[in-house]
Length: 132
Image (cartoon, rainbow, N blue to C red; front, top):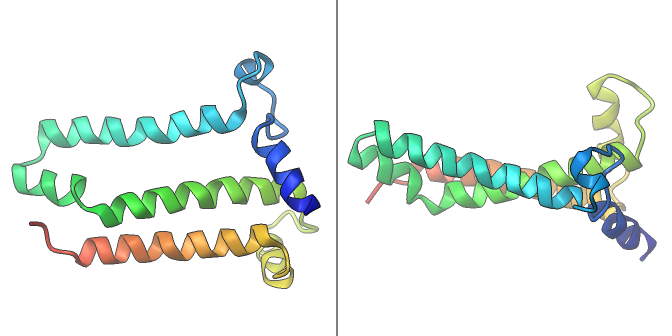
């Protein structure tokens, strides 16, 4: 139960990296979510301007891509949480994956790997799904 409380306070905090907005009292999850919501809007307008109708519908109306994007956001947030809370002994990326393999009792690691698999499967199924 303590891990959930720590994650909740971390999620609504500054994530160990204070900036101008977090000093004003805006949590880092809000600024990160706004950043992740701005990217699809920008891509949407570029697709609308430069892609043909069938290409536009194939990407923008494919729900698998949206599922993969949401799962990838969860993967990024839990990955940042694990970087701040579980300090890897190695500075190499391999040390971090060794940590991820060993501590399967930690719910953050389970959520990280599950959302990563859902994101990869969503991209795979979305790319194989024909446009309507």
